[in-house]
Length: 557
Image (spheres, helix red, strand yellow):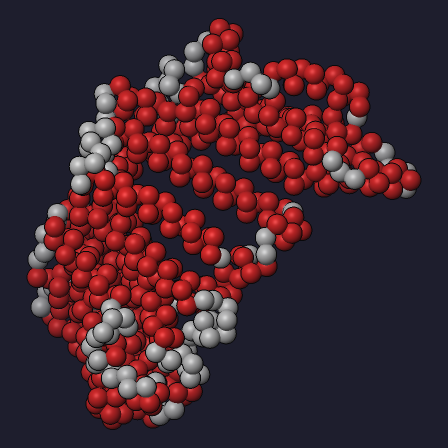
């Protein structure tokens, strides 16, 4: 696990050092643009659709070339492994051509097929064929000969040997060959597209070089690296599914995906992400209603908001453990640090990494929208981190609900609106209030449940400061105030009348208020917390649906 975190931190540290070197003047910005500029250019290329189009064209060429060269290579390689005759015929030719630099074959292929798509695909196919065929044949020959002997003793034919011994036994090697072939094809296609191509990621990189747009050239290289990484991850998962015995031998059980779903997934608290998603979508729908919508910016804002929420959850988990609160926690989530499933340092580093992701997205949004988002994002990261950290943790000093109301309600809605519209009308702030009330109600339900434990550890929340009866009144005000505020927004002409569809959740809200007033033990209040979070999601989605419905109706008319 330690090496995994180091592998994550090392590129982050490299990028930070690069950025600092340019900022301090150690590297010439003309020749070495900083990562922030490169990623901003990358985002613009994605937003314009140019990068996605070029990457798609390159991947199509790779896929077609691999289909024409890779699949026949697997079949021939298997035959070479089980048939000395086929091996004697093919291996000398394959061994002779394999060392030849494959890019050197391109002129010959162009002479035969002409300059165009056929020559590019054929070059990929030829290159992949010889790489894969030799590796697959070697994989078959490494299968224990006793398996073939046993199969023959039971009357297996050559066909049976192929399907029941050669193919399953060499499958790990075949998949490794495919991964090598895909990586080689991705490298080769970039070079091929330097010559005579009018599209593709290689063409984009070469054109950037010709006009000395170093930031575009580096953005293209980053795109190639990301595509290669995604292909590798996808093929690793395919290998895990097809040859699970191989992945079990190569990876310890604790590092498997099962452990992620069992330990890390609940630690990340994904059910809380509606608190980060709903405000972003609401701000976007309001922006769309005002004639301002940007799909790329919306996606970035959504990912950044979820990343900050994840960072807050992880840092909260870490500091609750450090303060001893999770050691006596009976209900709710958490406890994997106490159980020894996770080290405290792992959770803290994961939280910082999540904040870094959110901050990185925020810096890009700053580059395209201006400094207002910088201060808004900086405040969000700081509040998320110091929610339970630092000498004055907000959650431990009666400011939890206030911080959550402001930063998981108005701030996210305003931010999502601003990055797309680059303006800040009052109706956006007012539209954010209902979801702000409900997200604060989620936290307050949690604090109402834990009121006795929080007092024991001197954790000052509004629930402990107001007492149980006062905390119940606050819960009534937060939940009930949600519907009162929305009704006022509709009457004032700020929210469209279809948003009143949220009244469908009013019976649930009344039921929760009654449950909060009638129960006083953690076990009986735990359902209140869960259902309040569910109410927030339902109310938010219905409010968004109502706003979007009004927008669609206006467009139709």
